[in-house]
Amino acid sequence: MSLEKIGKRTPSDYERTSYVAGETFGIPGAEKPHLFYQDRKRLPTADYGEGIYIFDTDGNRYLDGCSGAISANLGHGNKRVIEAAVNQLNKIAFTYRQQFENKPANDLAELLVKLSPPELNRVFFVNSGSEAVEAAMKLARQYWWTVGQRGKSQIVATRPSYHGATLGALSTTDYSPLNKPFRAMTVHSPKVSAPFCYHCPIEKEYPKCGVACALELEKKLQVYGSENIAAFIVEPIGGSTTGGAVPPDEYFPLVERICNEHNILLIIDDVMMGCGRTGTFFGFEHWDITPDIVATSKGLSSGYTPMGAIIASDAVVQPVLDSGGFMHGHTYAGNPLSAAISLAAVNEILDNELVENAAIVGTYMHERLHKLKEVFPSIGDIRGRGLLAGLEFVQNRHTREPFPANWFVALELTELARKHGLLIYPRRSINGLWGDHVLIAPPMIIDKQGVDELIDMLQLALNDLQDLLVQHIHDVNEKFEDHTVQRYEQPAEVPPYARGDVSSAKSARNANVTAAMETGHFNPQDYEEEIEED
Image (cartoon, rainbow, N blue to C red; front, side, top):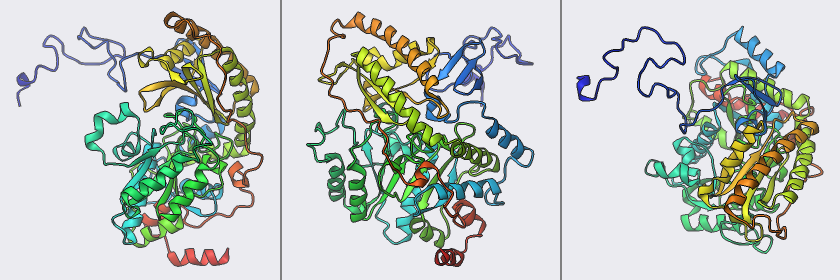
């Protein structure tokens, strides 16, 4: 092949012999970074982190008000996690799951089982939230294939929703900017309305609606035929797409009943809410339900390493293992280094009672945010639970009319907050096209003093935002009757395992289904004997 056909790749007068970071060598366009992600803007370069703060190479300090992407639940520079990483590095960093088991992965799997409802007793490790959702979808599909109901292949999801960026997870996602370029590459996933009362997709009002969004699932199953549906996937509390929307209390018990009656699996996407952020260890534990499969990631390692997992019931996993094993896996899944880091991270959450801290300090954070809402009429709603809060911005509180999309209100606030030393997370609530909101989700180690500092910075940014909005609209300060609902209060009582209390829990043999099915160490007879002993 001649390079002449596609243009010379290197200027003829330049011969590269060495590279020094930052040099451009006079090459047109070389001033642009070689690394790319989603856009062309340049960002500060992170240098180091301490607790709830990140410092850049220019010496600027930022309060991490969103834990990165709601991931760094332990903050930055946690000594216990660092020590666990170093200790494991001094032993071995990587082993392939088809050649060896490793103790950190088995220990982490057993701990996750102890923290889960009793029926959820099998664990499969992956490397990210998207991979966890993919694994959950494939396990659901293979389960039905194995038990002879091979028509059950489709996964029902909600609109709007976000479940991941890989093609399988993207098919269950409904966030228009992410879906449109790839619609021809993704399989069809039926959608039902998300439990999003502030912007109800079917334009009803709770409680008069009778929880119509849950009943819509039943109608969808009738239309598509439950014999064609493998599972329903949903977040326990809305994440990036609905900005912390908490479903009505009746929603999940009703959804669980519908799934059971129509013989489909319930998959909970707990990637963002899991590991304590909302005041229970798993987000779904705010309701008295037991999913068939749970996907978790983000907080599982608290941002210290790529890590994810699915936790499933033996009723789903056992037939798959008996049929020859789960036909899925990733090279780095369950590696000893990531497992050791995640094990230390989860134990740090439990030993320091950070689940309780998320409930107590999270309630205080919501109270402070509601005070801000009294000052800034552009804040239409504050929602969420624990140390996760979504702030939605509207032109009119009464009508909930969003700002024009081309004003980019959430992005503007994010940049203004950065200038004041605060990091927040912007998204859009109405199918990813309209409705600006930001997520506030600081590390779970934050205390009330840290919340006060966060609120002070946010208020400065909101002052700046209001000045910008006034340039476009003169009635932004008009007083509207507040019809929004506060949803930040924590339930008085939750099951012990939901708070992270594993003192009375008993580990399950072969909790690490990855090792069990791929090394041949799983023995169904052993498992049956264990059940009898229990």
